[in-house]
Image (tube, rainbow, N blue to C red; front, side, top):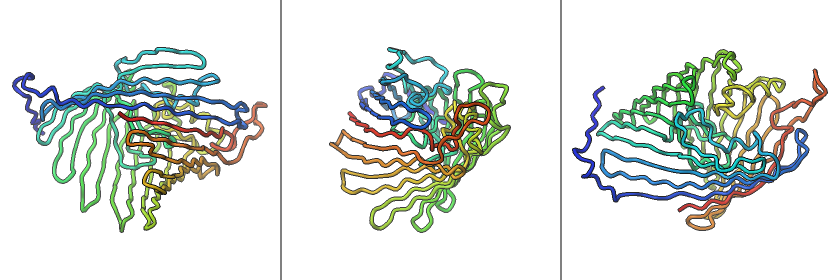
Length: 396
């Protein structure tokens, strides 16, 4: 495949005045209730400030730079329950972070979240640097989104964290593309080499991915289309597991992650999104959830669910042009536990949004330990903390 990228004869001819600047301020504040696993209540506040600069000084070249500050405050020791808010660094080679404060009840860190340069040709694109890398089409959990996926219970999915990568893409036909992505990890064992492609056949998008993801051979496929107003998507990825000798490793020598998702909007305005997910990286029974939580796939952010079979739903309804109510539901079909999280989104102004939420965990609780006197969970969600809080976002 010939690479048709034409650089301008002189960078001085570029229009450097065409610059876009923006960002946001966000504050998420959560009160945690006592549970069977943790009798103590608590409170934490996660505060994020992000500013970006992007420009296209020439039709064949653009760039983006973004910096981010994350401040975490807690009335108890900051631990793994809050770590999902922080950026996972397995997909970053360059150290562009700075710890401003690191204490028992407070953490403050700054980082470069984007430093990306992109060249464009008529049918080709090449990008280099810290950038957002996302694959897949499914909204709740996308098995094809393998590099830096969002957790299904994430409160904020506005901005994907940047990874250090080189991407080359060739576009053809009606929505067709083939490409290669090299993601530089924090060590050679965490490098990723991925080939991707998509093509539209009779209104149905066909997706494919193959390569090596952080020491795992993998291949996957997906489809996305519409049948009588029902949006349907399906994705499947098969992995050869990371060796257990490489601590942490995966639970299995090979495993799939797959899902089927449907979306429909009713005449009364109610929107319903539902997905069946098979998480082959997880454990099939509660007595192995601890192993799943410490596995490589969990530590790298490939999954945040300890079990294997799930039903996820998210109905939403706009009760006013400025107010939307939705409910996130995640059911573990094997142990009959669930997370149910009602959310109320309110637009306070063109630039300001308020979200109020309550997380309710249900299911079988603890049982006496079979080996020790320490109680053991009988389900994924049944013995963990309920919580509630609000998030305030201002965009500029």
